[in-house]
Image (cartoon, rainbow, N blue to C red; front, side, top):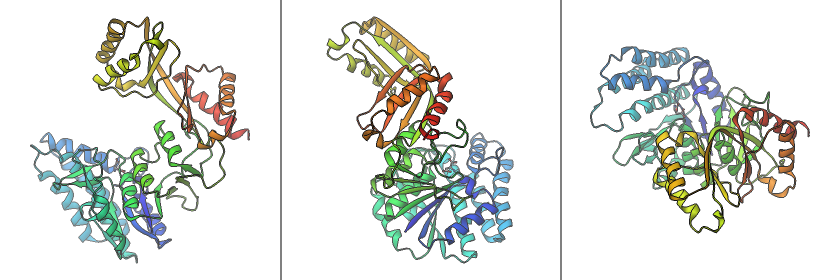
Length: 451
Ligand code: ASP
């Protein structure tokens, strides 16, 4: 049994839905279809979810919502008319969007989530109807009926583990089930969404719940590329990745799959494949527990900017018991997440994402380090980028770092810091952001074009 999830661009128009129908028909094991809301039809278009945010904001502020309602309803109508689905389903969807504007505004923590979820919910109804009219035995199912019960954290829901028992029962469904992605229902029956892009999470939950043989995630690219296509011209696509490699690449901006979507599949040991709705014959990228294929030591090169580093030094720091704890304590007290901590003998740097450090928090940290911890020097370095060279097979290979540093030195790129975790899944290099793209191109050239 396979769970198949389609993203917004795969569902943006009638012609896209025809491709979706053909893909589902092509394989009788595709029994669970998880859908996003209609996405962009072209670059300057608006996603239905974003249109729902505008609708919500106007409604909340007691403004006229007619234009927002009409725009959203029209998007569904265009699809319904082009597919010839008839007026019953249209009227149902239309009414459901109108009804949002009668929900209570005061003391309603889940109002925003209810608006957002309507995009996926109505799309699942539409798609189930379309499948039925085209020879598939299909049925829409609401996340509550499916058993997707989540925590009460608006826009950041997490699945409650008890959900899995109910989800397992879906295995016995006789029809193809069409499930709206992106949201679940709390124990007290409120609609609560995952974070943005969360339909990927629903797909993974359903795959783990029913114990699928495969979770197919259909999007609009031929899988995951070795490097970002906006930086490297026509990069190769990766045929196979492990969950760990995917997690590392996602950390540094490879956002094809929502990073929370890996967890349920990983726990359930369900392989994932990322495929292209517009090119379904391309094998895409498989994400598995352990490599089955022969792979190069490095599978991907990622870069991400907007990092800062708090650099401090103090003579005989290594002899001072508790110094590191005190530094981390002040970060915890200020609710700051940190990312990396490279050290020397008498110096220590904390690398974090720029957004964690407000001017007030920065002042507090500097005052604490100089006045309480009495460091000799401290400074904050900005405009840093993280470059990650990722691959589980690096563990068995000598000389990967040498190859990286050679490639970077030839481009005159200074390495500010280097860090590698004990799992050796990736090596992290911290450099100046102005050199990030050049560094990625140089590494791509050395690892993938020279071979
Ligand atoms: N429609 C939602 C969003 O745009 C969820 C999704 O597409 O995965 O964030």
